[in-house]
Image 1 (cartoon, helix red, strand yellow):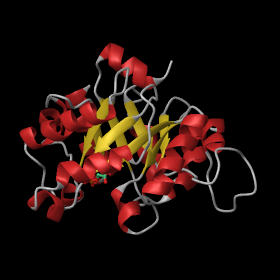
Image 2 (cartoon, rainbow, N blue to C red; image 1 turned 90 degrees about the horizontal axis):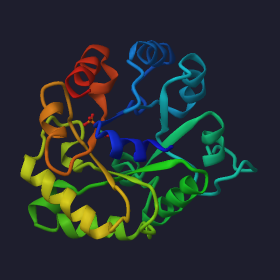
Image 3 (cartoon, protein in one colour; image 1 turned 90 degrees about the vertical axis):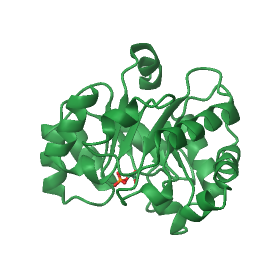
Length: 244
Ligand code: PGA
């Protein structure tokens, strides 16, 4: 059974750790070995650490930080990591369309939609990141911008996805939107996508041990996507203790 279905039944909050390119190999291994292996905790190490961590921690739930847009199959795709390759090492999820990749030009609406379909073709659940800039929020365009990001995915209503709402102005800044600002966007995402089953929505952006509990209790929030704070073992364990 996929975790997304399990989550909807158990109502555990999902905790996704996005380690970005923060960690040396030894640090990633040490962190992975010391994190409690719970079914609602998903670790997303750098791609070069995925198989290594899978080997050392067979129980850990893994997400890649990206996935190939070219194909979901094994094949002649130099430099790519395809959905089948991820599936082969038992990764269940792929973060797709993170703002750090969108803003640097590595991802755009077109290849993000392809990545999502490639993931789904190989039973990898996409964790699709959407969110607005500070300027979009200040000029009142943020809901339209996020709705456009969602529509460009061309999702079918029966597809199993996780959407991560990550306001760009909150990532790595220690600035977090208010509860009502987060709820408003979560509501809009649900009404825009009209997914038939349970749609899992997580919030990301400056989540830490001081605010995680409050954030997961906001109506409409099914979990958190945590960057920097998930690379600090003491802080990450404290977040897990509070939420799980
Ligand atoms: P942050 O990053 O928790 O360090 O703000 C979140 C993310 O980029 O996913």
